Length: 204
Length: 204
Image (cartoon, rainbow over all chains, first blue to last red; front, side):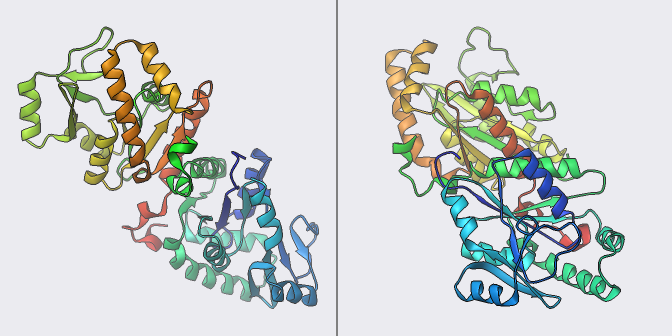
C-alpha cells in the first residue's frame, strides 16, 4: 500500500506443517492482506465454505479456466484438480495489496516461475515425525493417503533451497511462527531489488 | 542466539539520515544486539564517551591496529582516521550474538566484501533536502564541511544497489523506521541461504 504494486507471498511446505492455522492468524493480524482462494474439483468437507476455503467448481469449469490461461498453477492430487485463479491475484497486486497463498510445493515453484518477485516461504514442523502425528490426528485421510502424503513431504524437502525463507513452526510456538512470518512480510518491502526499476535518486 | 553464529547488520547511508538515533532505539528494544564501536583518531565531542560512542585512539595506536589487520574497514575523513575493530565483531558473532554497526557507505561495502553474509541496510531521509536541514541544525560542521558532506551523500546514493535493504527514515516516522529495522533483523535469520551449509533433512 506504499504506492507501488503489492507483494506476493507464497507459504508452502510439507502437509501437516500448520500452514492453514498460521496463514489464518496472519490474516487476522493484517486485515489488508488479501488471500488467494484456490479452485478445486474435490467435494467440500464439512465446514468448508465456497469462496472462502476454496472455489468448489466442476471438472468442466476447472478445465475451461485452465484452457483460458486463467490459472497461475494447477495440479492433480488424489484424483481431484486444484489451481490458483490468476485474475484475483493480479487485480489485488495491481491495487497495491499484498497477497498470500498456500499452494503445495510444486505449485509454489510454478508461481515463482510466473512471478519471479514472489516471496516463497517454506514452513516446516520441528520434527518430521510431528507431521505423521498431525495427519493421524486429523483422521480425514485413509492410511494409504497418509503414506502417500508422507512420501510427498519427503520429496518436497528437496525443493527447500528454491525457496526464499524457511520458518519452523514448532509445537507450542505457533505464535512465534506468526510473528516470524509478519517480520518477513514487513521486511520484504525494503529489499533493494524492489527499487531497481526506479529512478533511485529521483524518487528519494 | 538460535545455536548458530550471530548475524552482522550494517546500517549506513547519507550523513544526516538519522542512523545514530535509529540504531540507539533498536539497541534499546533488543538488548542482546551487540554494537560494534568504531575506533577514531578524532577528538571526542562534548558528551561522547570513550568505548561507547567511539574508541578514541592516537594516530600511532590506530596505525598499529591497521597494520596488524585488526580493522575490518577504515577510512580517512576530514583529516581523521576511523575504523572498525575486527576482534569484537568476530567474538560476538562466534558467541551467537547479532552485531550492528554504522560505518559510512564505503566502509559498509568493505565489510560486505569481508563478510558476504553481512546484511547491508541503506537508510535515507525522505527528501534529500532534509539532509541539509539536519546538518545545518546540528551546527557542528563548518559550511565547507557541510558542502563536502552533501557531495559525499550524493555520491553514496549511487552505491545503493549494492545494499540489501533500503529503509526510509522520514520526518515524524522514526518509530516506524525502527520497527522496519526490527523486522529486517528478525526476518533475515529465516533467509534460505543461511541454511545451505547444513544437512537440511537431518537438522529439521
